[in-house]
Image 1: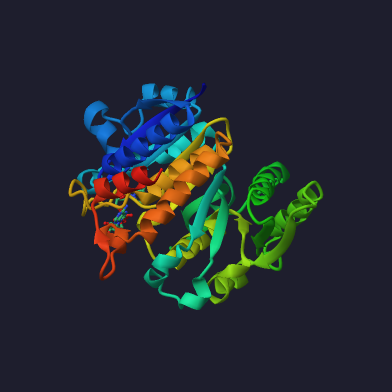
Image 2 (image 1 turned 120 degrees about the vertical axis):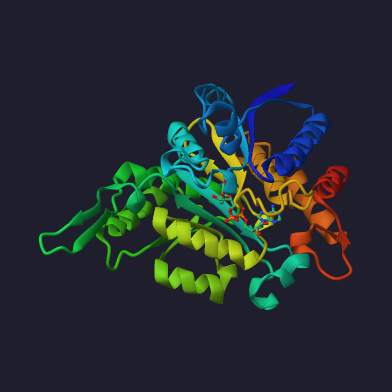
Length: 357
Ligand code: NAD
């Protein structure tokens, strides 16, 4: 029997509820396909601050590093908002990314035909949209030095950030994009601003070089301003989009909103030995503990884990198909509910998906 060790970090707010359902889905898939998922739960974020005084303990970090993958809920909430930035729950996420060397963030934006009305765009524009945005996560403008704000002799101030990318940093993210495209429709759009920014001129040059080893994948290039426009105008043209950190931060949110429902969107962060999987939304303190959260983003994050960390394609497909089938049957949590549908809570949605698997 195949076996995988998974660190489960539910976190705060709705985290424990949505992760609870995702874990049940994982166990069901394991039982059905004879795979052993060895699950180890630990505290992270505010829950860890409350018990241990810090958002990520050495023990949790050790567990995570010794696992094959990590499933995370969400962290943060009003209770910890008064704390200094250096010790807030969200610091745990930055530390995990850094410690695990997670330099690639994958965010799919897929339209389910039965939910097309939830989008703010016209049905004919978004029908069939299935995009994977791959954002470089550890380089570029957010980390480059020099950075900071300094006082000038005339009393005014000067702010600086620096966008830096080296050849190896671009090569490794480009490889991930081409590898992911091979598991999809084999098309990569590399997004840059090579007409203005030298850093991204290098980005384009390196992506073209890496592409030589992936001639079965189609590559095109797009300036970031045009990409922002094309995502709204004709999103169906995209399969995989790969881009640097800041552009990716913005474009991945834009792509996500094509679908119109934050509770549906999973993500994966890859790079090192251990991948991290989590919904893109936060801890939703406004609905925590009320059984109203949509667990689908977290359940689809489990599907991504099976696909990208364990290469369990059939099992990942089975989860995604179960989600689609439950939606087709009219089950809806409050965030995606429409007139005449079957309103269920977090648990009810989990149960419906499990019974489809
Ligand atoms: P949020 O994503 O938690 O919530 C935004 C809105 O979407 C809320 O109205 C919420 O009820 C709703 N929502 C989110 N997920 C949902 C789901 N699964 N089902 C149904 N409705 C859902 O963003 P926020 O309110 O800006 O942040 C709340 C807290 O979460 C903050 O402390 C923030 O720092 C934290 N946060 C954490 C992460 C993370 O852990 N990765 C990401 C974003 C925000």
